[in-house]
Length: 235
Image (cartoon, rainbow, N blue to C red):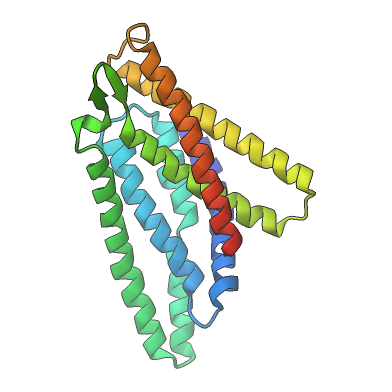
């Protein structure tokens, strides 16, 4: 039951996210071509390859409910094959066969390529010493830090698009951003510490390393959220 709830919540979030991203892309590039649908499918394909490697294939301890919520719910709701099919058929009915063929070619080939890039990126992250860098008694889980940075960037991107479409005062916008950034930075940092503990790293013996990881992850998340916000404002 928990898995179904996770998928439902993730699907709702992914669907809203798809609408915001695709609408932003259409406002940016126009509707002469299905740019919005293509964008969400490409982004979703890249992310599902990357997160499948990080959350499943690398055997990182992560509850099945959370995996399903992210991979099935969020990314399933974010991507859309049905919209791609409808837009392609509409182009054919309009007699615009070159654009219809181009949409099929790009969507299929580019999405497969994006998924492969995501898998490759995830495998590359964990290629060296299982994703944890060791040096003079210090340890640094660089792979998960980079994965957190990617998610933080997307959070900033979505927040920028959402806040642009909702009329809120600057005070409310600032409060929402601080809440979102603080919650993600704290939870992702705690998850990193749990990951290190599960990898048989003693908290007492590695307290300095773990505190450094906590602080660095919080700083990286804050920076990448800011970069996402800047990028979102340009869409």
